[in-house]
Amino acid sequence: MKFFLRFILQKFLHLLLLLATVCVCTFVLVSLSPIDPINAYIGADVFHVGEEQRQLIAERWGLDRPMTTRFFLWLGQLLQGNLGTSITYNQSVADTIGDRFAASLWLMALAWVFSGILGFVLGILAGMKEGSGIDRAIRLYAYTLASAPVFWIALLLLVVFSVNLHIFPICCASPPGVLFKDVTIWQRLHHLLLPALALSAIGVSSMTLHTREKLIEILNSNYALFAFAQGETKLGFILHHGLRNIALPAVSLQFASLSELFGGSVLAEKVFGYPGLGDATTEAAQRSDVPLLVGIVFFSAIFVFTGNLLADIIYQIVDPRIRIGKTLS
Image (cartoon, rainbow, N blue to C red; front, side, top):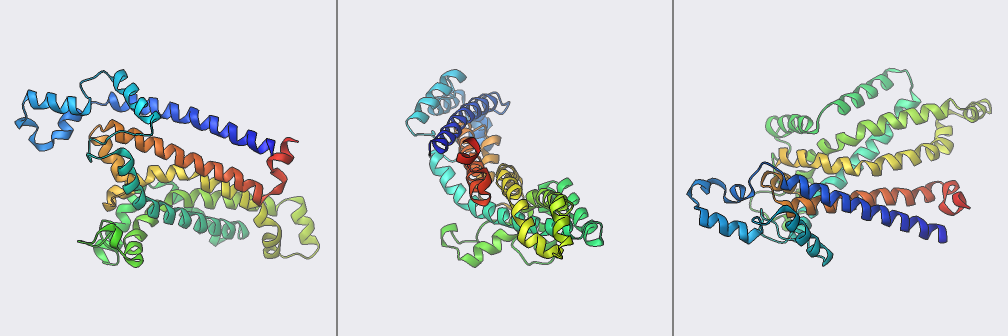
């Protein structure tokens, strides 16, 4: 038990250090952005707004203060549990993230499941058929996905399945005139499937290639050769022995892909007009909305860190040989 508590304490200290670094770097970089937040806030009427009104806007959002002063004021609010107010949406950052993340969670979860299952199955199939036509086709597919940017895959899917075939909607998370909270499960999946497929391309290639290499390594090991000599079939060996050995690195790789999902969701949501957290990140960057962008980065760091922590804990369940207590004792 004490080893587990030490493990949790170490992870918590790492999280605090990570959040401190992320917040400082993000706040400084966005504050030094060449985009004028006042002009971005005013928008198309920038030439019709006088200096007095500009000064009032700057005072309203604290933009007339030095960067260091704004940072420590924001830090004081953060320590009180307040992430500040978004300039872009004119509401609290916590409410904005909560509303947008509810939509993004469906998208990222579906893409995460797609990439994990499809990549794992393709990797096993390619490893079983090493050197065959199936193996070469799967590797070509994986290398193509690995080299193709997310926005290109999203545009390709959009043109083929939405514009030409009219199977899926072109944009948004719900039908026109229907609030997101009122959509049915089928309507939500209908709008989600295409952007989820585009986003899942991030993890499919790495999962496929990694699983394939691990399975080939296991099939060429000494204990695999001994099992084959005893009459064990390749499929039987994979089911009884191989899956356990390739599952652990697959779990690690899958949870590590959460950070890539966050980055990819920005591009996928922009292409499909999906109103999620990625779209809010783009808007915050374009408008130099420091509180919102720092809040999103802060939240995403916690989310990704939690995913990696869950992977470490799942290790102990998948393979008892590496449990913390046994390893350190």
